[in-house]
Amino acid sequence: MIDKLHYISQQTPIRTHLSAIKEALNAGCKWIQLRVKDEPESTILEYAQEAQALCEQFSAKLIVNDHPEVALKAGAYGLHLGLQDMPIAEARRIVGQEMIIGGTANTFEHIQQRVAEGADYIGLGPYRFTKTKEKLSPILGLEGYQDILAQVRSAAMNIPIIAIGGIEPNDIAAIIQTGVHGVAISGAITHAADAAQTTQYIYQQLHMNVLKEV
Image (cartoon, rainbow, N blue to C red; front, side, top):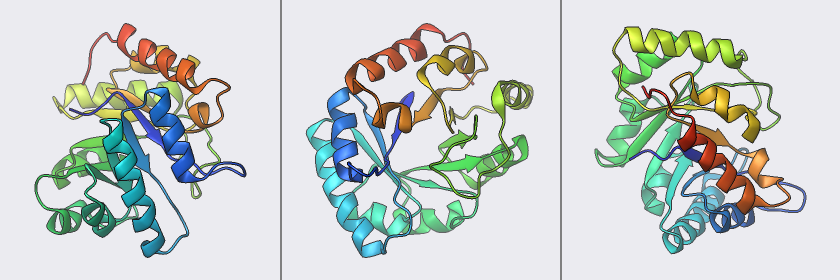
């Protein structure tokens, strides 16, 4: 089961990836993506092993961004691959058939590609501008999600789609109406004055505003 709320780890001047993950877990997040850029794979493996231990304490799922070998060695639940990362089929040969693999998309054609590649879920975005990602794809906005999800329904495609990219808690009520399965959040939880209250509010929005899931 793909959770409706994906927390994407974020390092800040006062918080490491691991301390941010621990805070998100304490706040009630159950699906954690470790997203570390510009660090050696050996360092990312250390992070992943510690993050996996934390997730186990909280009965949460760990997803590792970009690095299939790290995901496998750390015993992670899943792997997430960007459009410029290793092809899903190649990653599948490394991690095996049991591991969940998610793939990034920016267009309906990308979703078709990801489904053909065997992705288990799709991160579709960005919703708006976000500082957490370099080389940002074209921004979709609400209309972009409406158009793409309409095409997904017309094609009778059945894959969980997670909206991602600069999403704030107050955006969720409208986004979830487009038919996405859930949302990925980073800064809105990392920088929240009360992360637990924010996480609870996000889950309420995700479950109260569902009309039709794709």
